[in-house]
Length: 472
Ligand SMILES: Cc1ncc(COP(=O)(O)O)c(C=O)c1O
Image (cartoon, rainbow, N blue to C red; front, side, top):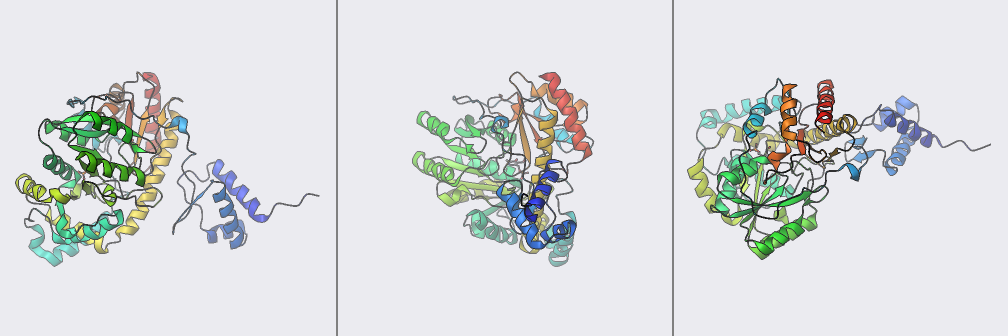
């Protein structure tokens, strides 16, 4: 007679079958060890052994101080978008006719808002912020509603100087200038480091807001492709540096929008070294840096040296409507301060005091842990639905953090026409052309997973899948 399998193995097989059957989906947390021991009527050590065995098989993943989770669907290289084809010549960014209509729809609650890369009410800590706001008004009275000098409120700059240490940025409160979101920080960084006609290296695809700033400042762009799992492809940048004088390089090293990639410490170090060798400034856009799906916090490029201007905001982590961002400009600090004093001298005082309160004592770390899990779950579920309902040859990224999905359809697919089809069905999204400095990437589009996944989302993905198949 064969020996019966140990009880922990039986439990592991049962749990594995439950995961395959969809009782637990990607992103779901498994019951705690204690709860599982009660549910399956086995000892705590049996559950612990079963969870360890499943972890060894890659079926579940432990998250420090959080529990065991079902990881996103297995990495399928065939389904990951390829590095974008790019122009190797400098380009002038064209205005996109569809840009304003996409922006107008982004926050429209009547449509399913796949266009809005913004947290929704399930993410924004409204009740906590309301309590802090009352406390701030009681403490500061009308001072909380007065003009703030151009550097921003010291309370916020002090809180940020502590927070930035986690990313490896050593900045005193006097090294930080607060801004009207990361958008103003990026504008200041570009204005301080370039003059009209200069060449700026930008990722392709990249966040369209950066492209519009470059265009409006009369700058030219040179495209550097972003590769899933790698981030900015440095060999392409090095080729460009051999041919052109580049004034600045705008890069999102952590959870790049829209690819979701992270540059490795080695790549960050290499980029920092290149900036010193070739004399260009790295403008680091790190708005997603705190939103890893596994709880780690990747570093700023500044940790590795180089000429780095760091830009950030709380738009993706706390609330975009507070309009709180910052810039750490290093040697450019006096120039950035001069420009800020002319451009937008007064900051949003109340917002800055509230954010300072939240960062200092309001449970920001707990909030981050919660939203990282939610974003990870929402991305995994939306990705799964796309894989199920879209044509089989489409490719979807597997973001390591943040909350956007980048979908690549077959060549010839027109994402602008597809966007018009989607809007007619009450669904917004952003066509790929907006992410391309040279107006390419027409066969791609971006879906945001900033809002809770539910039946409405699933219906919308099913509809998009059908519309997409018709346009293929
Ligand atoms: C990569 C990136 N940078 C900057 C911004 C703008 O951030 P903010 O709202 O803080 O101005 C966004 C917003 O979508 C973004 O995705």
